[in-house]
Length: 105
Image (cartoon, rainbow, N blue to C red; front, side):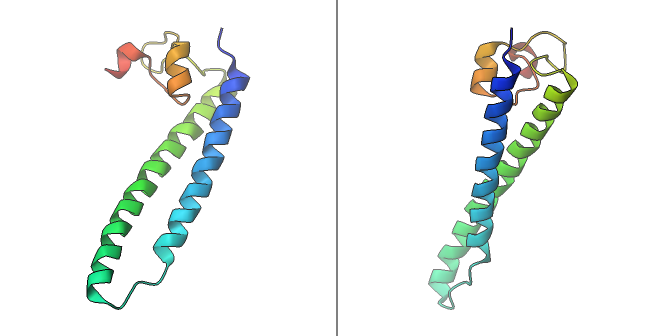
């Protein structure tokens, strides 16, 4: 039996953590850039890394939102593809998992 409330708490906590991190990334990306050409080039490279982290964070937040929606619908822990139960081990590792191990391959 899946402890849905425990996973809901984990999902909400992770969403809050991601939200705070995305805010910090946005602040860094909004910082004024150096006028020095070489420093500006390095800052641009860092910006690309930050933007990539931001995209990954947004993708994870979307997956968390979908998992929270499954919680509300009573569908959490059920594979969206085959309808089998997603293992506790998989949910412990990836609480927003929508697919079981067999279907994710």
